[in-house]
Image (cartoon, rainbow, N blue to C red; front, side, top):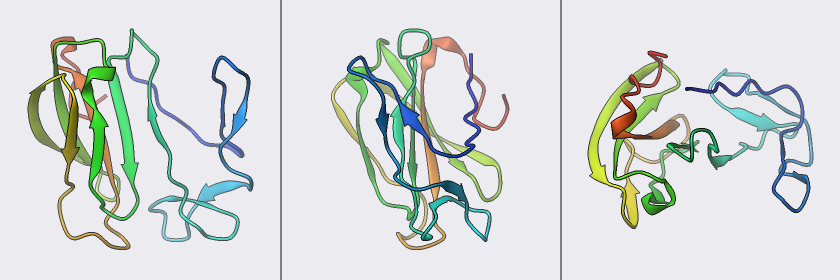
Length: 135
């Protein structure tokens, strides 16, 4: 099962202790159509993992192409398959398959900087999910 996030207004996260607002202003797509920004134009960073199917997927966004460090043991699986998804072109590149143990650093393609945004998708290898963008 894949879930697509369609953002309309303020994104609210609801943990067991109650709702937490993660953005204090309205969120919208940037003028260049490449990222989510706040009213003042600041990039909005959201790192999340899904709670669907016993945590079989992690999704992380890096707006400037910075390395992402994820604890793969947070997923309730034996092995994961990781992909970089290019939101500018709608294309996925497979990173590889890894044991779901401990911290792992993922370095996106290209040099860090404005305009080098990427989405990291880490799935349960055994679930047989297609590449991101092929849902």
